[in-house]
Image 1 (cartoon, one colour):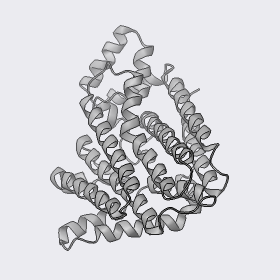
Image 2 (image 1 turned 45 degrees about the horizontal axis):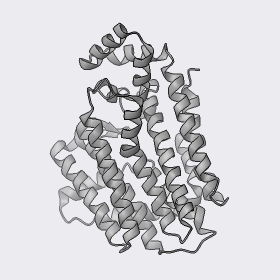
Image 3 (image 1 turned 180 degrees about the horizontal axis):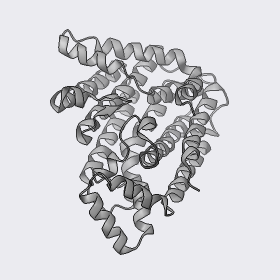
Image 4 (image 1 turned 90 degrees about the vertical axis):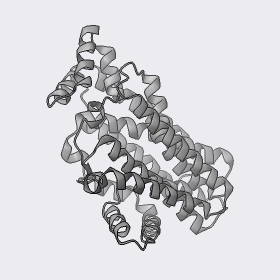
Length: 338
């Protein structure tokens, strides 16, 4: 599966929007007169990532814009999408410090290249840039939407780190954590796009709910692929989350499937990981029902996301939102061990 070609096709209805948002972010990052900061910001823009969150903002706006008048202008839409992406960029840089990650998108991470001091402050800089950007719209609804999303995302990230090494984490605990850590910003992206239109509240909420369920899907798929995929396809070393003591859904299901003695053995392995730990954990997971149960949860959230889209008017942008769900299905199918 060619990821880039698939994403480019799905994003086609909002291709120009994404280019404008990228230019908007470039202009923000180019605003510093300090040579060192400009150099770091230039490095960031060399790997813009998948642009998924701003794409969700534009697709949500586009899905409603054909049937309802605009409530805000073009600049407000670009600012909303850009602020969501800046928040995401900030979170990734902080994540790489916490995880001591050396690579991001198959390239050296900011943390590996400049160290944690610069990385932490750069993340703060991007976060404050997101705040400044959304405040500039002077729209209380948009500002409130982005602020709530940022707060929930940070709370989820903090809870994840606090629960490292908590091997008693349950499925419910995990789902609550990823709803805040990941799904909140997906929901924010979709809700913000809908807020730019003068559409009925139920449609705005339906798109916000779609974003939440898609975000849940996205994170569970990411955790699933972190175990079953390869370094080449991931763009980073697989298994880094579980080797740092984080309980992802496949591992939670594995712990539920094995005997008490085996669970204790796996906990000891994760508490003191070595070069063989990830391979042994992966082999154990693939020999039990953990993969099937994880796939079932993924398909459940995809179904919920599809249900939310039923009320949204048909059109190219709605089609693209559905295709994002199909893309997630395809990634699971590619590695399915059923």
